[in-house]
Length: 139
Image (tube, rainbow, N blue to C red; front, side, top):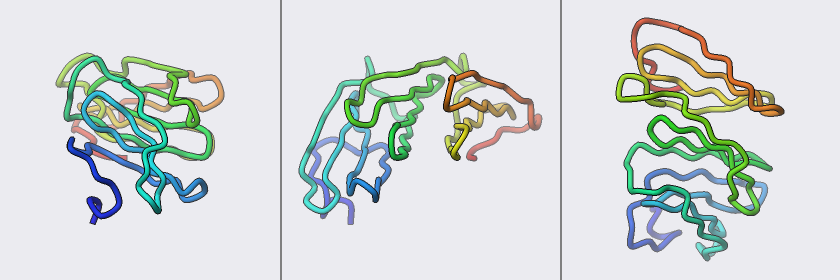
């Protein structure tokens, strides 16, 4: 189904749909992309990562794009895909970011080993909580 909307020679690792703008935000290899939803036409491509990786996820709201790459968390401006905020939420395989979600006020990142990072959307202050001794795989 996805290949009927977008034609990509590279694997799409993660995507989110912005129904208000009728766009798709997608990650593939080192880059992040904006596509028109109905036509699949490429609007913008921006190299975001220094190397290829498979542990990436992207989410978007009406103004911002939230992205995780292993232990690194990014906030991007939706229109330009420029980095607004970047933080290392984990340090290694025992503390990488497993899940990502958000609401009106915060962004939530589940951290392997049972942690939860809550990032304030206004000032990007990060509060880390120990939720369990087990891993949280998704929020």
